[in-house]
Length: 318
Image (tube, rainbow, N blue to C red):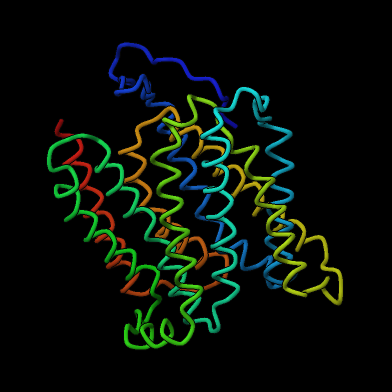
């Protein structure tokens, strides 16, 4: 996994300096892109683990093992090196996001509402793009990225919505009947966009991913025991535990790469690339779970690419 340290790149266009002393490294941005690839395996592997261990226990096991892996391969800096604002505010945002997503999916009453809650969660790339533009101090930056954000968000809805697409009337009924999971997913998406955009300034170059991740595991164990769900009746076999390890490595590795990327790479490029997260996740889940990808998914992919290209062209013009 990537190191916590960062140095300016050579004078070959691979690095630049932003306001506030943040050195933008092309290498760190590439590491951030790797997080999106690793996260694509998250939904499918978590679904497989949940089928064997249950939703709450499976999540707790994944984050526990992922936290251990991070502590082994990417030990956090000593606590006294963390800025207090980043340690407290950043840690709370990180833990809240992960816990809210786990809870929102657990509270979804049907498979259809689970898809809808996931879609609400996937608003975070759009929120991140708009928030990053808003704090960039460029004139009319939000208005310039808005068309691409809308196009890409519609693409995400098509890609995640399944082969038959989303039933918006049914979705409105589900929200009215059981609003809590949707509220949690929305607040979690907003919390994650705030974390991604503001923690580079708060952290002063210190990455807290390896410290925050075990805190999420603790929160998920609390949620598991509070839910009243016990251990599975029959202990799953080695293959089930292998998927726990795969899920932990992909999620933990993804967050380690993302943390390094947002601290030392280009926030705008990572924000735009983040639109690929739900698309790649849907594709990987289809492969892992043996599902077919129909026309709505591919239409969604085209729109996501189109929206991302629009935003890239806008941000490339200084």
